[in-house]
Structure formats: C-alpha cells, structure tokens
Length: 96
View 1 (cartoon, rainbow, N blue to C red):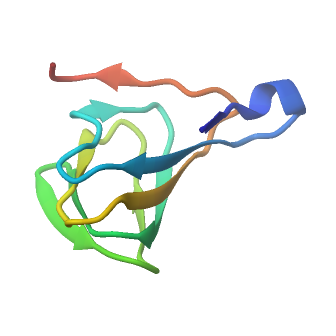
View 2: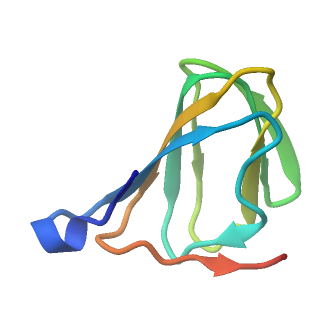
View 3: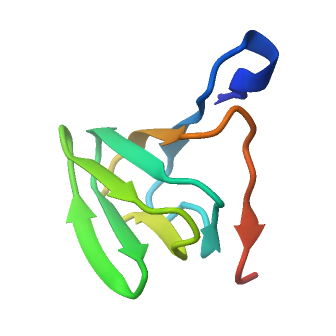
C-alpha cells in the first residue's frame, strides 16, 4: 500500500510493505529522510555502506541523499512501515 500525503495536505508519505523472504527494494536514495518501523519479520538494512539487522519493534532512520536498501532475511513475511518525510514519494534508483 502506498500513501502520498500531497493530495491530503500531509507533509509525509509512506509505504506499507509485506515482503516475502528474500524480497526488498534495491539500492536507492531520496532527497529527504526515511524512517522504518519493523512490525514483523527480520530485515537487513544497508545504508551508506553499513548493514544493520532489524526485527519487530525496531525503528531505523536514514538521512536524505543516503544510498540504502533492505531485504527480508527471515523465513516469514516482512511487515514494515516506510515513512518518507515528504508529501510526495521521490526515489532515485542506484542499481538494477
């Protein structure tokens, strides 16, 4: 599920992510910060060359223009809220 706040007068946008094991977005960046809330499952986040494993209840933040990606490294579905501090979703993909 995708929500862009611009149409609703909100300054934030978000993705509700439910990835299968092994799935997740490739390396990209945004011109604003992004906050992740892991609700279920296990993910490996890579941000600016650093890898961090996160699970339920963990909250991570990446700064603007920071290259990042994440993958579901668990055996169950990964449930994450990806909050973008922007009324519009803007992504620049850095790898295919």
